[in-house]
Length: 579
Image 1 (spheres, rainbow, N blue to C red):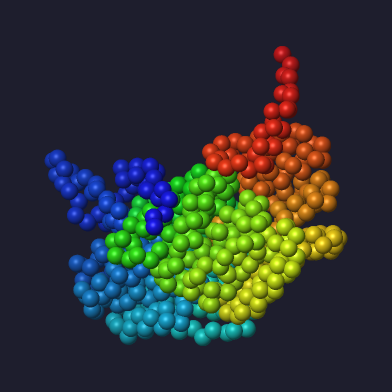
Image 2: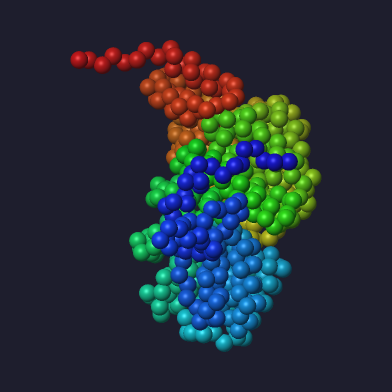
């Protein structure tokens, strides 16, 4: 079954005349010998940005090696590994080819390597170490990745409950890699790639160590990258890592120019097309986020077709989760349903048991129900019949969270308690330190669901106190890069509870605080408008309702909130302006 309307959009289509082309193999010569851009077919990976990574291996492998590095910078690990492996076959003495292979098995912003990935990465790093590097610079690159794979882990160094995003768990390996890359970049301060990979290493430390609310490592990485971007604005790693550095509410505006540049830099690299939506989502730029993820999903499907695969790609599912989230903020519910229906048919993914795929398979149907206040739908969601849940129990819990909220809001308290108990079981089954973030978030979701059961049963003070504590904890925890946003941010739920309690002024404060973290969310705007209306602040209500109506001009559903918003605006008398 095809995903809905995933053709490459006009934004990617107009890129070919303006981006720098470095690795375009087989260009066609035009008049007077002038090279013209090639016509790119779906899945064509010849345009990947501008990278210059000289090595001392055989001259005939230099171009392909550099293309592999460019794809590595865009986290296209599978294709980069294919290229580095081919380089190693063409030049068996090329130690840097083994370095490249080792680098593809570590995903520094996601999660640590699985055991089989760790073995493969270590084998490549050890092989590179055993070979003769062509220069001191190359040797230092190899030593750095070998330090990652060969540093012993200290289980006590990252207790469950204290880790931040991405590669959570023992940070020893990440710190060892960053130290070695720091030494390399200091030794060769004019070597562009040394500086880029060091910036990524610094950023990785920011994701690996316990939460640092000052974001010091992210800002340090951004400082390095901004200077590099002045020298090469078309570099995929510089642009990509800047987006990750700024992927926080208080920093997102700084990442907008990088997001806009990266979206046209590598027009058939799925992750490069998706990454701008991290910033667009942070800023509430829903149309841009939809285009970004539609393009990414199309590119992922094209690559799968090129490889003759029939399973749904994890990258596609990741993009579809972000796209569904954006559709729902614009009340484009029919389009969101098409995506949710497709996701519901997925039974096999590539890779088979993959982290982002598992998240999307659970989050998309849960979002579609919860964002629309479709409590009965949420209460009745089924757990997809895929093998992911045994490996990622905290992902299955997203559906149980929807069950618990939906059942509590429809008066099925026994069913809600059953879902909450299942959430506890899934929380306790999450034992790997690298999944500490998700265990923490699951515990907060469990508390939020418990609060709604308490409220519906009449324990109003208990429910309010619990949601206040939980909202604060979720704000501090932040969102993980795999997700466009929390399922029903708890601070929004706090605002809704305060409205239920007849305390609209406090509710308005809660909604406005939520909008600072999650700008332009439908539920946040509507909640703020309703709270302002009920507290007698007509001007604020008018402002929020107007934003909501403007944002949902493409709405294709019949949400009662929009009907009320339009009725409110229609009854408001415009303020006369004196001559």
